Length: 196
Image 1: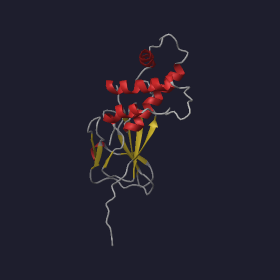
Image 2 (image 1 turned 90 degrees about the horizontal axis):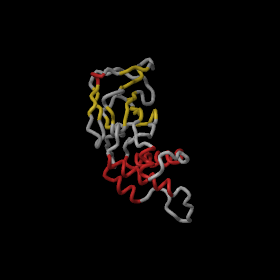
Image 3 (image 1 turned 120 degrees about the horizontal axis):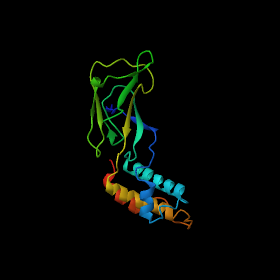
Image 4 (image 1 turned 30 degrees about the vertical axis):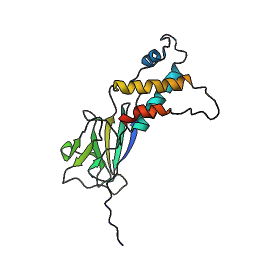
């Protein structure tokens, strides 16, 4: 028996320049902890806890929460849905490719359409016809763009801050058998933001 399948073109996205993880400021975190704002003795540890909570929220929700530069790789000029959201469409978005001489080129903006579906959906890209030939190499097309929030939604901030607080306040918890990584409540509160 022959089974026919239609394989959807895949996209492979990676961070090029990580975010600064400073949209939620250390001053805000100190205020949340009711910590003396002039006491900087624990600033480094606080920032580590805050960054870790944001990164775990990004991993669980499948969103780029902190703004960063991303690059998505394609095997050709295929219409695809991005695997990163939200994408910042206003600046820095470009499609690049390796032409038949293996030289990097930038595709003209009239050769594709970016369909931005907002912060709660993955964007899509559709290519026009009459596209340039590509060099025979792995992933000859790549797309560069910014992704992430300029300002986090307020309720997302109030989900991340308690998790960062848990990390900070329980950083020396060495109880045998304790669940010391991600609290169950953190995932429950993040679930409305989870991209499926």
